[in-house]
Length: 351
Image (tube, rainbow, N blue to C red):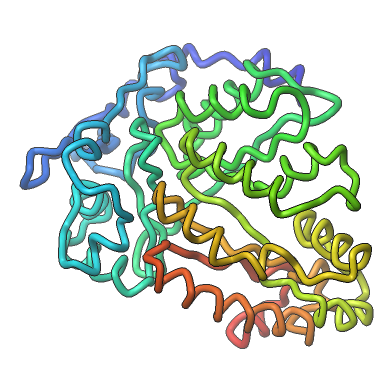
């Protein structure tokens, strides 16, 4: 995989691989914000506008990225998108995504205010183009990238990120576990026009030498603050898996398949203590609210096979995640919940 990615060339008609029949255009909002779209010329002469998330890389992988949101952020109060929405204020981000989604800014504001949608946009990631995730909006695609102990090259991760964006990714997660994690993440964030997510417990585990007995909330908190200050837009945090859930998972065919979930399960088994991501959730939320980082509540007990779908363990965690989501809303932290894992079609609605 690493070798093939290095050989990728993006030097088609416009150096990014797009046909000459596809060009990038910008539509203006009421405030004059320029929102990108792809314009496709059809054989019959008609033109079609499509959602565009390619950022500056539509023009080539070496295109310069601009701090689109810098001026918006500097002139206003440093609070979350949800806090603005609850106050009845339509931010530039809300207006931007409304144009992208073909709806009104007021509709976007209301969806964010009531927690049905999120705009992951860290105050320290001004390079990002606002996008929205929610059931009443277009389906979004996430791409996972990341270094490992085997291959840890900063430029390679940067190329993966750009390829992901050009291929249509709406968000990118940096799941790096090898090399200089901070430096890799910094390069990715500063070059990314889409929201960047991470799983902070991964870096926490690496800092603890991959030793469960050294895992501690103080280390996790350090990682959380550092990543938030860099500009990570959303964190996946496995706060919903509790000690009382572990026995339920023993009955499973495929056990616990979530990496973050298994790390926290191992911590609870080794220490005999409750999940600190649950007991310290208030502290976590205070950090997220300060930087407007959205939280993706991780499904540590998602089923790894159809045999375990909708079992007691999964529903126990989901109930806890629902309670945590309400706590996040109280602090104006935007939240989404992961799921549902491996589930047969006939059980999706029940889940």
